[in-house]
Image 1 (tube, rainbow, N blue to C red):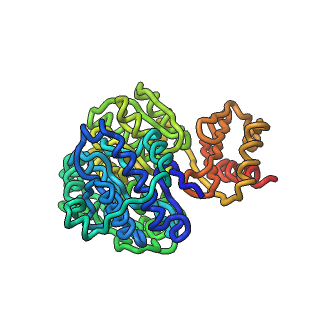
Image 2 (cartoon, rainbow, N blue to C red):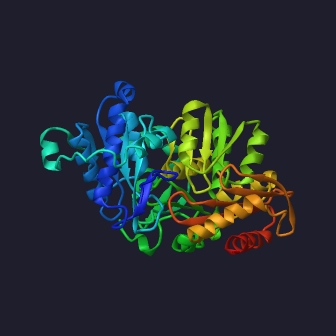
Length: 473
């Protein structure tokens, strides 16, 4: 089976495709790519940052990466602990390194692991870099230097990425405003790399932060560490207790954000992006364009239009947002899956920073989350958003997309289709701006069905319509 990178790096099931031998093969390709990038090395000489999360065998796989880099004469800095992906990105930028490699499968189920490549600017590997790496996979024998020898020769050293990461957060977030605010926050780290970082930074003064599931667990409590409502039952239960203002959840490598409001209300990442956008414009007086993926909420369209901002829509994959953040003046860019990038921080998503920025927004406005959302919905409408994932066999997937393109439905559960967007998958948009999107996952054998509508009663009907359309032979 050929090794291919998805929307964000390479991921596969451990002991099947994701093995130490295959990690070494992929790293050999990365090493060859980096050695060919003489212009990059000239601009950013130095070691390659190598990090890992809390997943099973992640430290071992990170060591395998360092050994192959050393075998190719490339020095590396190997993290001294499990940490968020963005800590590697921050370290690369702060130390002006040529690249970073992170062992993580992010939000994927426990049986998965993966590898992400970060460029010298701290963001996800570009499509050009991914293509360069993929064409080199398996082309040359693996060169490997055992860790003890590599350390003795100075080709591998241990590094404290966390201190650099925390310094970057402190420089970007107004922690003093958060400490002054009478906020009660519960953080669900989902047994991932986020640990107690938000609690450490935000707890103090009038602010109180408690963390659940902060301890590492390679099984992630028995489900994928993805911060979506179906995986956050304990956080939802905690938020139904009186007196708690905000629930924050982060995925396995803490680059995604999930938010639960008082009374257990799930807020989708697009709604959170709108709150952050309004905060950046109104209180930070920031400027710039906005980027959203095709699967994100229509509320973003309405907010950007009201603010007179340029809106750019891209396929799913944060590397596309990161690329735009390098090329243009982008204020904020976000995916429906909870990854959001911010101007002035890094061209990279960071669930911990976005959670803290949300706390800052509430602190500065001196309002509770329900009041902030009510104001947004009065102005821009209330949108009801949902997603359903279907595990299908490849022939079913091929038939589905062939049928969608050749015989596009004329109506969405009775609502005439006004337009069709094929930027990523097939998105059917109704006359009332309701929409239904079908797209393949870039990391798992799954078809994702997304739906959004201004009418709450229509959401389950739309999703059911999408499921029936998908499984029809």
